[in-house]
Length: 193
Image (cartoon, rainbow, N blue to C red; front, side, top):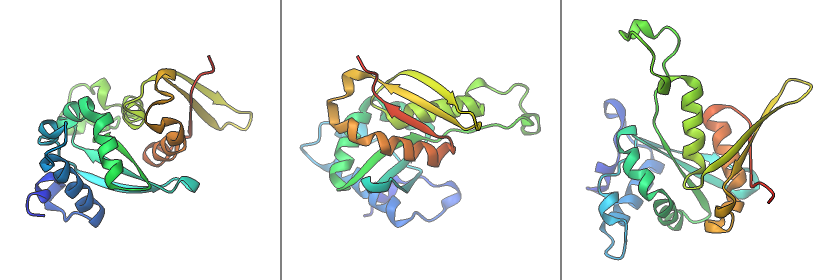
């Protein structure tokens, strides 16, 4: 466990939870296993947090937060890394999400002249949506506003990925995780061809 603790980067030296330790150990196991094909890339990967989200009948999902600076590396190996981690956490889906900062409207107090587009609430929520469904791609979005004013976003995923990596079973997981992270309702589906 000595080197597995290097896989966790917490702010101000906060103590990691048992789930974060478990994720760090799984990442370390992937890194040191001789048969792993993503061994070199996993060496740079660290986590900043992990949460468990209940997904109704499907059980639970593990949401792993990754610092933004290593997200580019994670994005390249996301599909394979999720598959490896799901083997380690049996009966639980794994979702990788980058840590992003949202700047509120009085950002001038923080000494900034302009607020970058990537730091707005809308942009961060869009990026979280892309992270949650990864490695699949989003091909369309519709927002449905019902008579009573509730908004439901329908997210259409790439139909080429329908058969891959049991993504069809993960659609409810995506909805639960997105709701937990952004407090917005979203349904994920594949377009009828």
